[in-house]
Length: 151
Image 1 (tube, rainbow, N blue to C red):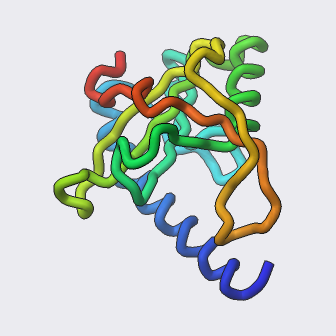
Image 2 (image 1 turned 45 degrees about the vertical axis):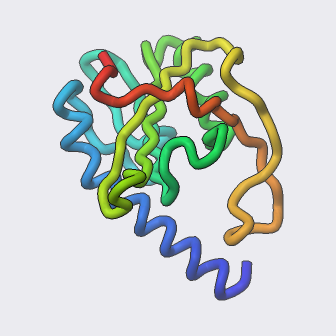
């Protein structure tokens, strides 16, 4: 990884951590979550209800692309945790720029119910950070719901 790629990786990490801190209060309006550590599988956890949450903050607005992706290994890990009884639910949160005001964020969610109907798989990734493609899970953008509807 060259110097420019390392700089971009640091910027992306800072961006993600900043939005984790801002988003936890929104999540806690509906759940009782705690922030997990850097090396945990997911970003947040509600221990009482056994729910794992993964937050993906994006610099795009919802609908800018027909799908939204995340690392396939997150999907596999979440499903294994459900199968092993470690969690009851896995919810993926997507923090998009507001289309009318990019300084604001719009929070959406997708819950993995174990069915691949609204998922496609591909190879790709962040070409700014690496030249090696990674397995991705692509969720149809129309499958996302506003977080306010999450129960």
